Image 1: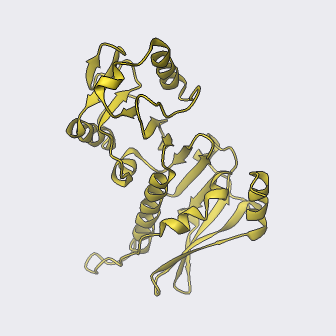
Image 2: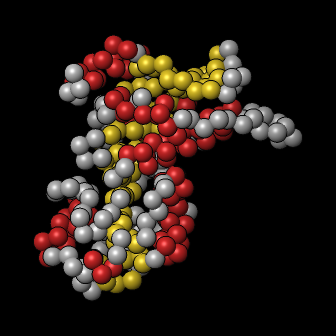
Image 3: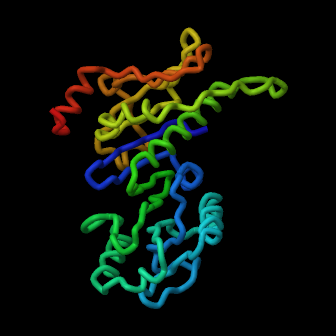
Length: 262
C-alpha cells in the first residue's frame, strides 16, 4: 500500500508535482481522454514516426489506450513523457520554432511559454520522473482533483480493510467530494503530504494527517514529519460515511495572504 501522497500545485502554469499517483491513476481518472499523443522522448521505440516534427506519435483512441496500458504496467523502460494533440493535420502546420519549443519542453521538462499549445489544443502534458514522482500539466484542474479524490478514496478503502478476514465482505468507502478536495487548494500550493503511514482511527473516524512540505522535490523520498508542519487532517467517518477536512485556520489565512488572495 502507498504510504503517502505528495501534491504541489503551481496554479500559474497548472503544473502539478506528485508522488504516489502513477500513470494508471492518471489514465483511470481523467475525463478528457487524449485522441492522439506526441511522444516527447525522441528515442522512443513506441509509436509511429511523424516526418514533419521528426518525433513519434500515438495516433487514435485505440492506440492511445494501448499505450496507457503498457506504461501503466511499467512494461517499458522508456521515459513516459508526452503531450496530447487533437488533429494530425494541425500537427503538420507547426513551425520550426514551435517544434523546437516542444523539443526543449521534452528535454528540460519545463515549459518556455504556455504549456498549452494553440495548434495542438492539448489538455495535458505528462512527465514520469520515476520513483512514483510525476509532473503533469492540466488545462482543467478539475481533472486532477478527480484523480486525487479517486486515489485518496482507494487508499482509505485499502487501509480500512487491511486487517479484515479473507471471508468477510470488504467495508465500502464513499468517494471524496470534489468540492472538499478543492478546499485544500491553497495548502496544496505550498506542497503537502497526506500521510497514510500515520493515519489512525479514533471514535470511528479515520484520520489522515496533512503536512506542509514546502519545495520538496527530492526530500519526499524520506520526509521528516514535524509537529509544526501538521496543518490538519482529512477525516472519514466510518459510521456516517462522510468526509471532512479539518485544517488550521491561521495557516490557511497565511497561505491565502501570501498567495495574493487578500
